[in-house]
Image 1: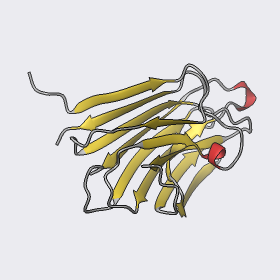
Image 2: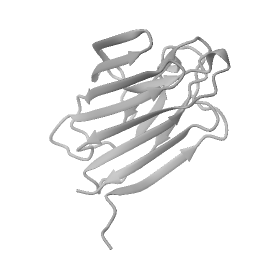
Image 3: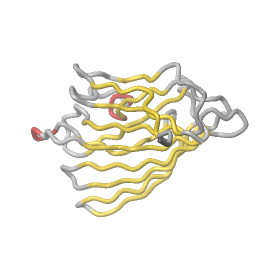
Length: 175
């Protein structure tokens, strides 16, 4: 029987709301990582929130991204630099919303020490019928040993946690 390509490393399901979730001590034995987040932001303003990631606790302005988004209001695209990598659009808890969104991201060559790290992610948010695609870069040659996940609204100082039942799964991809 062949060895599976996706190797489950860790799954976290929130039993209580959390401002952030960290995958620590990531083994350096795989070529790429896949991060899957299924959940919702507790932000109470109608619309979407963004899921953001930081690598190795780096909060410097070492991240850049390009985003493409489509929803019932039209389309949008933009690029920016930041202190974290945008990972995808997520639904909020506004208007008694109970829907969960899903974001799946590939983190390429995470253990390489001779190149910057890149992310390709895609996601959806049911209440606003939105889909999104992100390409991001972490301008560091360090191997990724930890990934912190949180909402953009929380990082901007709003009260916006990952809600109860949010599930985060990290997979290693064999070369």
